[in-house]
Length: 339
Image (cartoon, helix red, strand yellow):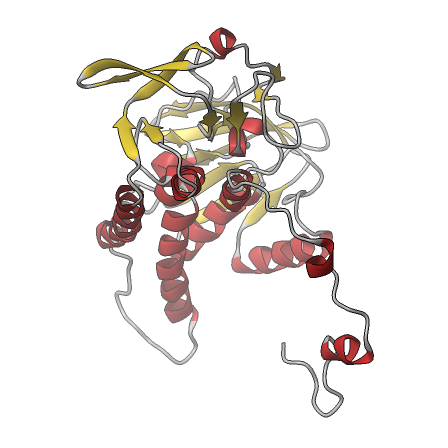
């Protein structure tokens, strides 16, 4: 979004990407999970229907995976076309700062250097890990590997009850897995509205998802083709959960690996890049947007941060206070408002 808007405003733009255009949301987040959830929802509805009897009903995970990949590739090609139409130069590789005005891009073709007056860092985030839970990508997985599964695990342990963990819990419960969610805090979905979170938990428990709150993961290991997760219960006792797969979903960490931010004099706020209200870093001319700055890690928030703020005249922001304008915002008394 930032690259396209800059090009629209007349800037000469270089877009550096080490993997695929579209970022986490399109390639490893919102889009693929929603595509899979649509299929899982249909399967669950048919399976749970009291009037439809479908003997031998099962999910073809390979086909589900292929459909998900098709959706992602279609949207990704659309992003590529937009970038091309706006005359944006794309460099596929990893970027490194050499100084505040110079970056080096390493790709299959070698290393190239580019100079710019302005730079926007939008490197996103990666799955956060617990030191006591070794992610191997085969038995103990992150959300990225979960999206590439071509078989449905009979049992799944989800470590973390945030929106990522709960979404995958819903997805694989819908596909037929027996799901356990382990959360250290007193409640799951702590960033969501309390009433909505409470209602969702009630629905999920009715579907058979087990949710363990105030439960701390002590360690996890692979043993005899199963994942063993040792937890400490709210009562202080140790208990071992076993499953075919375990998902590490304890949040996201900013991705700044290899950027050499120190050479650009870019300051950090903990693990995140420190920015002001204009998304500018400690170095004038270098900006940072999205997950790498912390706050809410959402794609549409990152997109909004990458767009220049428009100055709207005060008159345009405030509707004129007349009887007609006031009543225009009220629902009609003749019929109830639509829901």
